[in-house]
View 1 (cartoon, helix red, strand yellow):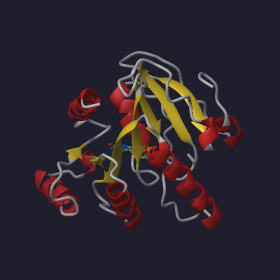
View 2 (cartoon, helix red, strand yellow; view 1 turned 180 degrees about the vertical axis):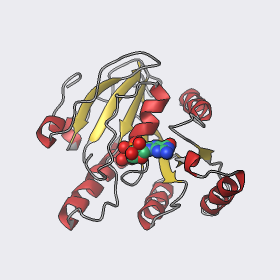
View 3 (cartoon, rainbow, N blue to C red; view 1 turned 135 degrees about the vertical axis):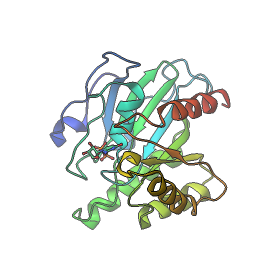
View 4 (cartoon, rainbow, N blue to C red; view 1 turned 90 degrees about the vertical axis):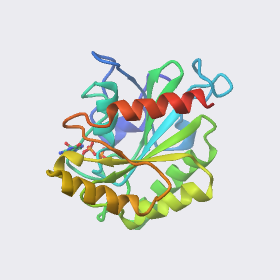
Length: 222
Ligand code: GDP
């Protein structure tokens, strides 16, 4: 149901905010189950008349919400937190009539019980596998931490299932010198030798233009 919140309220999360200055976006819904996903065919998009969805994937605290907010230039749209693991829902945002951003729950938080981790995995996989509107996933990797086991698992999973993805290296402002940055990107790039990385910083805005370019190109390819 568009414009309503389901599981977010019960999880006690701060309600994502509505449209403000900048490019802007609008929170649609938080889903804890696939039945709560918004209808695929609402809007004016290019996937058989449906809006294109771009998913944001990564471990907890990698900077997904910050990236989403930076892209729409709306600081409070997605919920950001220094408490990793607190977003356990799939959040849908309407960005344009033909474009949605979909913030998937972060993974890899050590203190989450196994049962809960399995639930996240099922939720993420049901979205990534079955969603017709999904045309591109951004896989976020922290510039200073590089690939974690679960990132590599997810990358292999996306490749196995033939899902299009783009790696974004987050928090590059934390690599202070050019040499540090080059070395960090080289280590991350080793895992994906045939692909371009996009370095991104929510602090100085590096990468925002390139990421929008990728989104536009992806839309025109549908
Ligand atoms: P999420 O859990 O993946 O959604 O991560 P958040 O966007 O909530 O960010 C986690 C923490 O990292 C927060 O304290 C952010 O302020 C911080 N952070 C996110 N992006 C950046 C960045 O580009 N540079 C720096 N220095 N910190 C960032």
